[in-house]
Length: 154
Ligand SMILES: [Zn+2]
Ligand SMILES: [Zn+2]
Image (cartoon, rainbow, N blue to C red):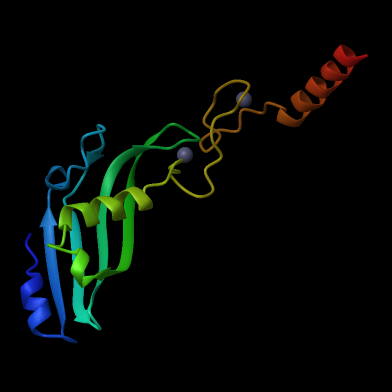
């Protein structure tokens, strides 16, 4: 996973493409216990132009995740992109692992959802509301809660 900046520098204006497919551990992405179900695919394009390295990257992978609403395990498909100009004098070498880590952590959702429309768990009986209509009256509970609050305030 080396990108020779010398090669880029010697051909200004020419775009070089690179592809890597590596296990997530190669990019130090498994340190927080993340479990990947496939390797990480990375594409990078780099060009030396006007005294800068312009780098465009994209990555793709999937990991075993847990829905933050219904708590069911599911495969989270991740796709990230990244683009930046690096001033030539500041760059000794292109840190591919660093780039991939940055793409990964900016793409990773804080609250992963199995689907955008996941209904989550019932806050009363705990049923998975994607699979069953437990019939609990959530609105009624909210009404009663606000009545209770009113009583406390009076
Ligand atoms: Zn869910
Ligand atoms: Zn319920």
